[in-house]
Amino acid sequence: MSSHKPKVALITGVTGQDGAYLAEFLLKKGYEVHGIKRRTSLFNTDRIDHLYQDPHVDNRNFILHYGDLTDSTSLVRVIQKVQPDEIYNLAAQSHVAVSFEEPEYTANADGIGALRILEAIRILGLEKKTRFYQASTSELYGLVQEIPQKETTPFYPRSPYAVAKLYAYWITVNYREAYGMYACNGILFNHESPVRGETFVTRKITRAISRIALGLQDCLYLGNMSALRDWGHARDYVEMQWLMLQQNVAEDYVIATGVQHSVRDFVRLAAAELGIGVRFDGDGEQEVGVVESVSGNAPNCKVGDVIVRVDPRYYRPTEVETLLGDPSKARERLGWSPTTSLAELVKEMVLCDYTAAKRDALVKNAGFQVYDYHE
Ligand code: NDP
Ligand code: GDR
Image 1 (cartoon, protein in one colour):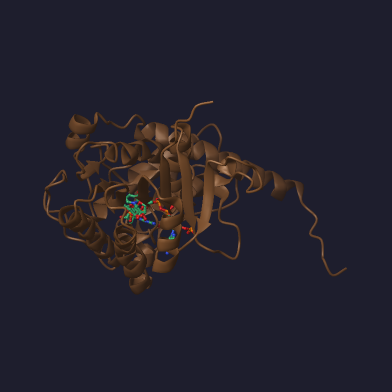
Image 2: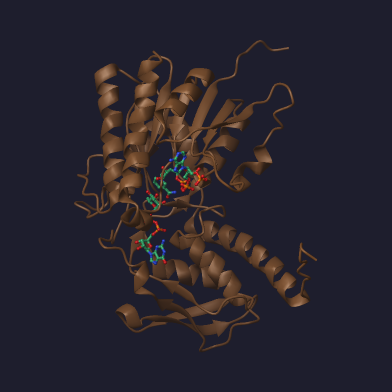
């Protein structure tokens, strides 16, 4: 038997999109992976259920702990117990629009949360042992000062989310410089997948288009369809999170594809996957997406149907109109480049959502019995 001790990683936000992909990636690398999940009234572990190990079996290498980024005591307790070699701070209230509704909570979890972990590392005397990754974001660039955006581009955050993440970015840099900690920021541009949260625009589109194709929904309501984003695949991006912690020197890196598309383009691509051609007519709040052609997998769509409309409730008080990353530093220093194209990403997302919609349509069309527990 090998006496080789596996590396130990702790992931905050393990139940989220990136947390799930990263946990899977690290387990494949032979890590012992610990995750922090917060208490919820219903199970929220769908994305990691395939990794779950019964607490009653011996030699588990995937272990969950309760904790919360707003609760220092829980963070100190878990970090002390786990003694991680690497911490990946992925937990956040990550929805930009929601941050305008819950600005104080967002600042607490996304900004001060990073500080709490860095302080826990220091309080526990783990500065030389534990490497720290902070999930920074292209939202820091906000009102962009330079195109494309790279590590040296000035920040101009445009939401409570981005302002909170700006604090987390700088406190990470500060702890690196002040205490010699291996701490770094991954400035990640948007990355998506079939397990992306349903209210982010890409997943909202792939889910809605699938449901419209099968007659489960009539119309998709969107906000600013002119917004431009640099979309990659979450699976590719978590590999880079790991790579950033394996270097000799801690540094910050932009991770992006270097290709930009509009929300409108994303709708067209997703619809085309199901054989629906979409034309956009009109301007501003009057803009609509109309079915121009149908072939293939959309039995419930016909030419002339309006399947996309604007709902101004999805506009943001201050918008980030355009983001385009320059990943040259990551390519040159980490040897990293994304492997999934936008077309492949859209295809994978639509396939998953169309399969789920087919199951829903089957249940709806075949009918089902609702049992009254009180009978
Ligand atoms: P998700 O929203 O899918 O996941 C966020 C995770 O954080 C969930 O596990 C959530 O738990 C957890 N969480 C939220 N609040 C708290 C809290 N107070 N205490 C503990 N856990 C909490 O985000 P992604 O996986 O997409 O993103 C991961 C990180 O990367 C985030 O920090 C995000 O801001 C950042 N980022 C994401 C990008 C993207 O395009 N995906 C791009 C750049 C940065 P629960 O499941 O209970 O809600
Ligand atoms: P973003 O992602 O704000 O870039 O943050 P999101 O998918 O929410 O929005 C992208 C763009 O699409 C526009 N949009 C809509 N957005 C949503 N959610 N719903 C709509 O109906 C809609 N219509 C148009 C938005 O205005 C925006 O311009 C994501 C998150 O993962 C952050 O945590 C992360 O830091 C950044 O990506 C990089």
